[in-house]
Length: 378
Image: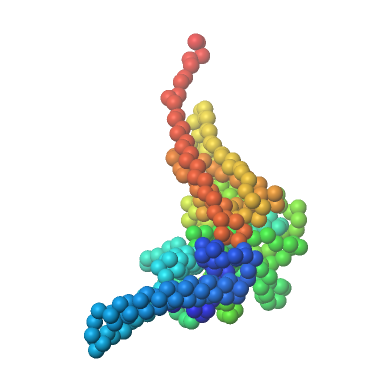
């Protein structure tokens, strides 16, 4: 049976979708409490009509039984069956509730790793004076621990990313709380009035305000405006600027250096991070001097993906969020490895009720031809 308590466990988006599918008039302008009342009213109205129809059927069956059977045997068996039919839940409503519950649980699950090597970590990186980049990995065991810790609050809990501003005395205060969802493991965060120091915390918050933290990031400080050039929001650009980004994110600060950030970047790019620039250049020069052939030709490829969607929509490319401008336009520059790849681009409306997906299938096939040497006498 549908009750007000059971409906309040769902988000306003789920209730709006349920009201829309059931033909509730004016659902798009209703708040959560109004949606609950409208669905209950509609369900009660449908139940009353069914009960009236069943009562008429029972009355007709009883009259027929009274005419054809002895009075002693004409019991209210049809009435019992009719009442049972009325009490049965509407299968369509049951499916809608089950689907909504499944979607909600999928969005709540932000785990990506499992097994003995699974661990929880979140790294915060400085991209420029006004943008931070948060990247996280959460184990499935941590999600289960959060569920147990929140207990009855888990039903209304949602995953969030909290941005903490840290003052000189190490005091922290929440300045942003960003709703995140399953299938995404990084987020770009815009900040104002640099320079400032920040830390990110990922966890779950319930409707009552109870918060359960899963992991805390390293401490970073945004530079003065103009102190660093803008960097495009892609891992390929991080690869080209990884040492500078590591340094901006506290990597050269002995007191605030983050082991998680260093490990994450080294795992991602398969090379040591944070070595002095002179040592890096010396190793590169030595390797080039030892391995460089007499004549070289190196070719690489970058791909630019651009498009337009509705203003205020959320766009992801292969699960990573893409910055959408005020007019709905977006542009992403990324490295194109030598293989076949499929890039799903997903746009979701601001209210979460509409979604569009475009899949790009791209193949790069680079062939290196045999070298040709021309003698000086030819």
